[in-house]
Image 1: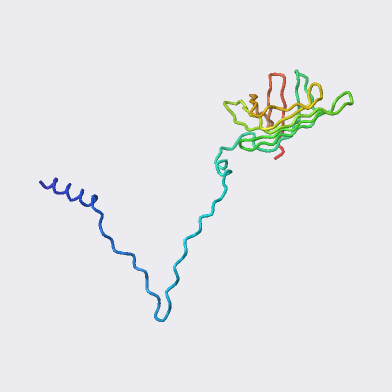
Image 2: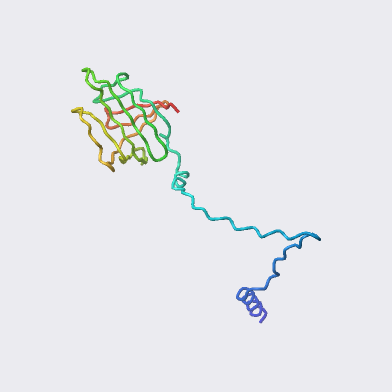
Length: 174
C-alpha cells in the first residue's frame, strides 16, 4: 500500500504545477524614484552566411603556394613559368603563366574552384576558369566542371598530379 501511495504523490507533484512565490523587486531607497524598466534589445538581422565555414576542418593544402617545378609528359621544368595557388578550407585559386619558347604571347591559365579532399584525391569543381593553351585562343571552363587530381606531400612540398608524369609542385609561401 505504501508504494502505491508514494507513486500517487509523485505523479500528483509532476502532473499539477506548484505555485511559486512571485519575483519581488526590491523597493527603491527612501526618497528615490524607481528605475525605469529596461527595454528589450532590438532584434537586428545579421548576415552570417560565412559562419558555417568557420567550423570546417583545416585543409592540408590551406595557404599560399608558389610553384617550383612543372612536369609535362615527363619533361621536368624549373624555369620559364610562374604559378601560384591560394587555398582556403573549401576554395582555391590557381594562376599559371608560361613564357612561350617561340616569342609569341605567353600561355596562361587561371581559375577559382571549390574543392574537397577524398582519400588523398583533390576533387575540384570549377567556379570560373580560362586558359589559352593549344591554339592560343581564350577557352572558358564550364562552371561546375569536376576534376580529380592526386596529392602528394614530401619535404614541405605539395605535388598536384594530373597523371604519373604530369604534375605541378609547390612550396608553401605562407
